[in-house]
Length: 148
Image (cartoon, rainbow, N blue to C red):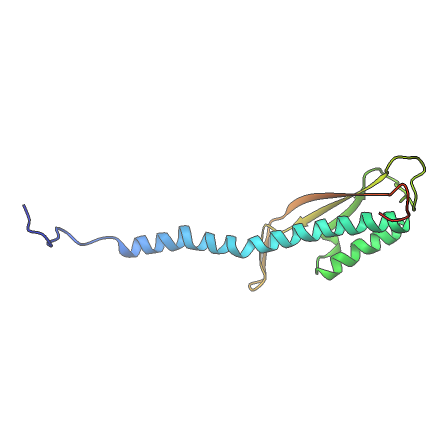
């Protein structure tokens, strides 16, 4: 039996444990913390673009105006136009202008597909991989007044 306060063998693998801890834990967590805001920003941009496109389509009745509103959102958020596409619920869709013709609420569904990088580190100029995300928004026309 040993007296209290004495150690048997105090040698260890401190350097190896430090390198493993930094390489396997600290770096991936740091990269993830740096990447999450860009994912949230692209998701928010996709929702805003879909909302504005369908809203403009209902108010103006013009698909060209809706596409302009969509591109304006992309320009405001510095998103390249080739990374986002706007589609409608039906192909060859005409935006309804104003009042619904019957007593039902017609809806305009804008579908936005976004392509954004998995890892984007702006400080280093690194951008790898890509993910496609689809967001939709329905703007209903009012049966009584001329606004959504």
